[in-house]
Length: 194
Image: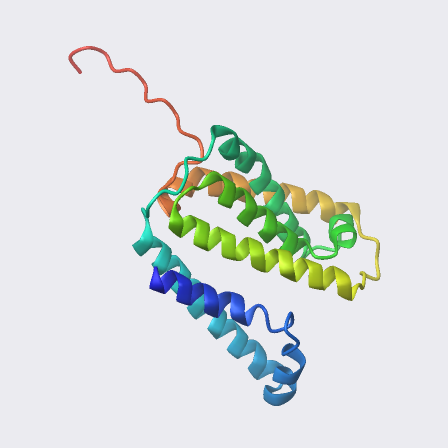
């Protein structure tokens, strides 16, 4: 659990520099290019520790048994979360309307995973991301701002198509990547004697 917590502190810490007002001073001190390099390296180290720490901590002690509806909710909410993240990089109406689609997508992703997982390691992982995203959203919406363009429909269609494609791929490979099947299929009956 130590690696997981350390990774979360590093990853969410570097992603909170704007939240605590340090982004401007850090860019002024380091310069734009070096700041981006340091930001990326620290993020990568934090993410690696999170993944490694979660693998080491899994399976961890169960706190509660999530009801089946939480998995169904996640099945429908995760594609929306992925669409939101994709929409941040395309000039569509989704991005213009939401204004902070990546953070909202992370909040949705973390929130439904938090509901659908009852073990300690998952609660630490997804709970941390959910709290960080919630605080970041409050700060971001309080700062205000908007995009110059209202958006383009082609970008919304592309965001949805790419997001659904990625969601399908993640669902298909979820067992291989994370050790948990998104949808559990009943095994086919075998003929006697085979």
